[in-house]
Image: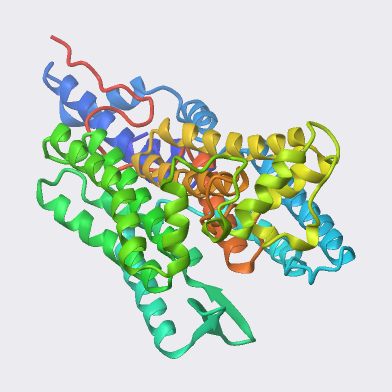
Length: 459
């Protein structure tokens, strides 16, 4: 059996087609190295290659062993937890919405959430089975295409809701939330940075330039919070790539510069609100920065109704069961932004803590799995998706603790079609990274990729 026949027979035993080309290349290199070692002992080329192939062992047995190692593994535990959180979020939204209507309120737009959830879960599974590594090959084109589509949509189909410019109308009577769509740029940005591996200082300029489109479009859509979230997430992704030594730059100096940007972000945001924001935004900023205002004081117009409502519920909640004096739910400003506090008021603080804890556990689990990826593209994309969700959840918890109001999105707890579908797409990417962690091909570097050691030349 010659080298080509041996490699084909072995790779045919591997069911995952994604990994076959890389295994074949690795085997070919291994056989070639061993062939040269035998030739150095005086064998002819044909004899040396036959001996090298023979040393590899039975191709069927070797292929079966590699198939066990390089096989996609479905992360069923994480999928189950996602479904549990999805159903729980829908149930609590439905129950609290009915309570609001029964109390004389107008209710909230939660009915569509169930249908989008039912659509989003199959989308997530489909993305999970897709090869996420293909994104790297077209990441720049996808980023440019998404940016152009949003710009054109803003020019010709801008849809204003409550005075905001966050919506683009699409055929069929639907509207797309631009800031939430921009969360899809996070894995694209990670894939772009992946393609810059091994380059020098010029990568800094390019990386910063790729940050601009997402942040600009979010800011143009009247979503300063999403602009800050994306900016911070991009910097986290860039810092991780620098920390892993992808680029020929001074790591400490560049990481220090990224850290300075992160520290400066709150100051720049506060200055923007103070000098260019509306009156209510300046009043809210004064409240956040004033140490004289305590928990029990009510500084009239300086605190939004939402913050006061949250603090009133927290002050009357019990650990288990409905609070002693829960405020009228018809006065709740926005169920989507305060679902956790509604759960705490009607079902107990422990139930709300458990719900938030499960969500954080899922996201930190994704982050942990991503950081341990062998495939560097998967590592960076997974870490970026986890980071953007963690930042959003952090802001959502601040809303529900009564500390400040940011009006940000939270996966599984916030209603809306765009956010729901985007959530499941990003979750699908992270599940795909988990599924293919033993099979996703990596650009070849020094050393072995598939557990086949390089032969040591005989002396």
